[in-house]
Length: 537
Image (cartoon, rainbow, N blue to C red):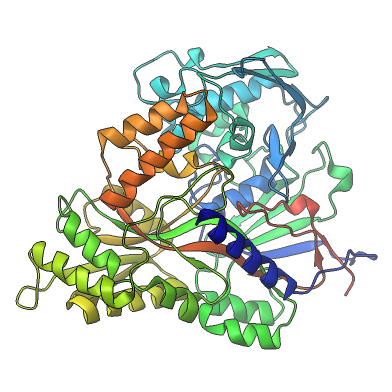
C-alpha cells in the first residue's frame, strides 16, 4: 500500500511539473539583479537559534551558511565545511572548514564560532524551542533540560581554527541532513555580546552567508544585499533580495501580476484555474515533505481525556473533497502523521481510512454520542487559524462538515501569525487549531520528535510515556531496521491517540516569473538565492 501511494504521489507531482514551463538557462543577465519574493508572514526573528518558522528560515539561509547545505535534489553538499569524515563507529564527525572564511564584517570565522553557536542552541538561557534537534549530540538533551549545567560538556569542540568535531551519543544516520537545518547556522559572538537581543537589527547583524541584512521594515519588507566577504561571492549573481511579508494570497497574486514580485510564497486556491489558464508556465509545483493538520488542545476541555470526541470530529472531515475542490494543486488526503515518501519507512494509518464517507459519518455519530454530545447537547467549538484566505476556505469547509454530520456549532477565529503561534504555545485559549509541519530532514524522526512530551513545539500538549520511550529509544538504536520499527510503533500510538487530525500532505506551489533562473526548491522547501539570477527580459 505504501509503495502504491508513494508512486502515485510522485507521478502526480511529475505530471504537475511537466505542466509548467521549464525555464531556460539565462544567456544574458538583466542589468538589475534584484529578486523580489513574497514570504508569507512577518518573520518572528532572524536569530537562527530562536526562530521557528519556515518563513524565517528562508531568509536565514540567505544570511547565514552552515557546515553543509541541502541541495535542490535533497542531497547534502559542502557549505562552510569543505569536507568531513566519520569515525568507523559512527559517533564522531570531523568537519574541515574552508580556508579563510570570514564574517560579513571581515573578521575571521573559525571552528570556535560553531562551538559557540551550537552551545548557545542548547543553553536553556537562550530559550530555543528547537533545541531538541541537537539531542543526537552527546549531552545535548541533559543540557537543554537543565540536568547538566556544564554547557562546555556538549559534544562539540574546535580541534584547531579550521577543524570542528562533533561527538554523538549514538550513531545517527541522518545527522548530516539534520545539520543542514537553519537551527544549526552559526551566529557571531562578538555582535551578540555587544548588542544583546538587538543583534539581528540592521547595522548590528553580522552574518556569514551569501547576503547580509540592509533593511528590515516591519510588515513591509526585508532587504538583504550581496556579502562581498562570502567565500563564493564571485559566483553570486544577485545584488539584492527583497522579502515581502504578505499573508493574503490574493493580494500577493495582484502584486505579482502588477510586476511588484518575481516569486510568490503561495497561490490563492480559488485562483488556481485562472492561473493555469492565464499564467501558463509560471506555476511551479513540487513535492513537499510535510503535513497540514488540525491540532487538538489536550490540556483543556473539550478534548482533554476525550478520545471519542476527537475520533468523531476527525472522521467527518472529508479530506478528498478538500484537496479536490479547495486546494486543487496535487495535495494528497492524509490519514497518517508521517507522510509517505521517506525511504524505508511505512506510514501508519488510522484504521477507518478505507471506509466510505457515509460509513465514517455513521460511526462518528456513535462516537459523538458516546462522548456526551448530540442534537440536544451539541458541541460548541472554536477553531483557530492564522490569517490566510487559503486557510480560511479550508476552515469554513471543515466547520460545515462538522455541522452537517454532527450538528457541531463552530466559531472561526483568526489571528496574525506571530500572535497565533504564541496563543498555541500557551495551550489556554485554543481548542482546535490549524497547524502544519514541514520535515526538517528526510527521516521519520523529524515528525516523531515533535510530539514528545518535552518538545518545545508540541502545541497539542500530547503526553504519552510509552510514546516518549519509543522515540527516545529509537534515537539511540544502532540497528536501522529496529530503529524504524520503533518509530512505526510510535506512530501507531499517534493514529490511535489522535492528538491531531492530519488533513493533507503538502505540495510546494509558487508563481515564478520566466526570467528568474535557478530558483530551485527541494522537498524540504529549501531554496538558496545565491543560485538565482535574473535573465534579460
